[in-house]
Length: 438
Image 1 (cartoon, rainbow, N blue to C red):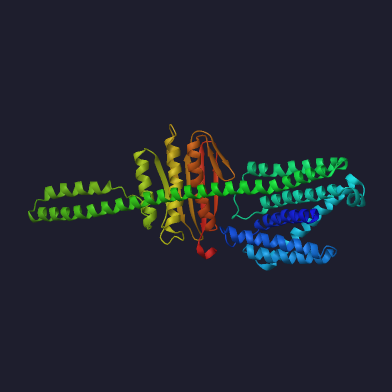
Image 2 (tube, rainbow, N blue to C red):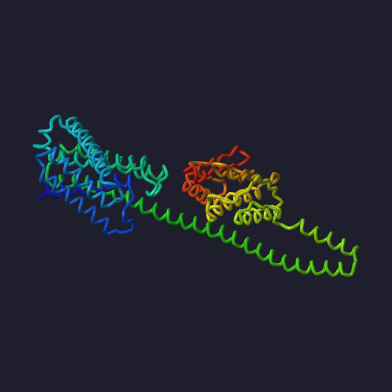
């Protein structure tokens, strides 16, 4: 009876490792359906357990059937083609056999003969099998870290270190149990040794999924923060457009009154007053705020709004633009890129004591669209893995989310970007290819 229980326990651990391995290469078919996922995993575990018992003495047949079973279940669980699932199953079985042979070598090293294990050290044999599964789990974690898809929760190096430390601790603990397993005197000690080893193996899975759940929640919070910033930027832009429309409506009303006044002065042949009145009207027109015209309504609204904001804050705005009609970037994405870049630049300039300027280039070229912003900054600014880390914590989160938001848009258009700082000036450049070059 103990053989069946331990065999089923090892199969559970092995198949959960297999599931984690496959998740590094594909996306779930039903992302939030816990019952579906549980049913697939349970079916895989039961199928593999009975297959192992049925083909216990037929090594080659067991491997072939195992590859087929894993492939079938994983194509149900993940959005991957059967051919890819077969290749991944073959790789997983190869990894599993490699680790099993490594632990077999460890058997010989510790007990000098395999026969001695099977006859005199039953507990030692089980401990080595558990050790193999823990090593397999750690190998799968490393593969997932290096090759994992973007659909997986993103772990920082520090978080991965925490995840990997537990299997390392478990491996050394099981090795210590192995070394002392030869001194076991009764069945109670055997049960204690096995319970410790199995609990350690199980805790590795539990810790991994706990950390993954925490990261999923953090990612959800991050997505909500991105959405909040998007809404804020779009609201500011739409408010600016609405204000511009109100201004245009008032201008149209004033223009009608001005025309009537000019007609009245002409009819009375009062040319001196007419000349003075026209001079005043033309002077007011030259001071109107809509300086920037790009033939793109959205870009005009954003740039004129930010230009007026910079004038109010005494920030010099130097820009180079051309005809931006027919951009291959959606209005929403233009808002995301321009609003975040210019908002960050304005906030950085506000913290500067003397140099306050923003240099922007927005050019539609033959094969691509180029957007770049350059601005000074004061204080510590560190760029790590494409993220900005400032010296002020409350600004770090806001700027970090804004930059990540921009990068998400760039990647969606298969574009590229450059972000750097030289100690006093921050620079961010975006290149988005035109549709014809995709």
